[in-house]
Length: 215
Image 1 (tube, rainbow, N blue to C red):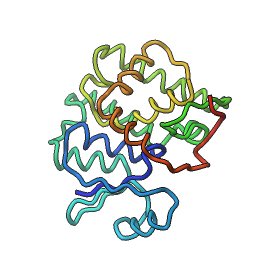
Image 2 (cartoon, rainbow, N blue to C red):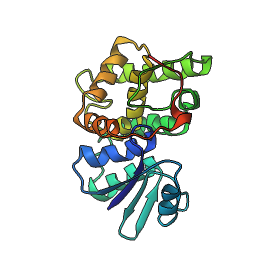
Image 3 (cartoon, rainbow, N blue to C red):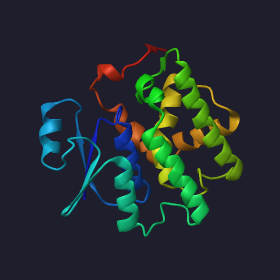
């Protein structure tokens, strides 16, 4: 398998797809492309009609979109174990993952992922509402699984929310105690530490993702 990703400092969607491979120690050739370069578009044009990352190529199968990649890997290689086993829990995990996939536009627009940086900015009312919703999801799940991930065992839902934990760290966002507990669990996980170590080696600057002012 080949997994095409972009700059690890900035690419939230790449992180989501990459996490399932790292967490389950699945073999894949990770091909990292620099955002907004001719090589980025020329390479992706050969493997995906969207010319976007992440894209997974597995033999004759090409899958683009982070959530689709997570679902494909779960079905093809993990026998469905990357979702909770309970029907009710699986439905909830899928619901909040879809919510993350299709929503939280204010956070995406105002707080781009920037792993190497510490930044400060003034949040809009919309971004504050997004953060409150994320805080509620994380807090509710930590009430249910105080010693675990969002659903006890690591799942696709954790992959979908991982970039938010990094954004919280970059911009110094205050969370409730339970939500902060989950955020720290994410930051202290071996996979995220590995991702951050690799991101720290990058030198590229994507100006549009350098939001706010340095701390």
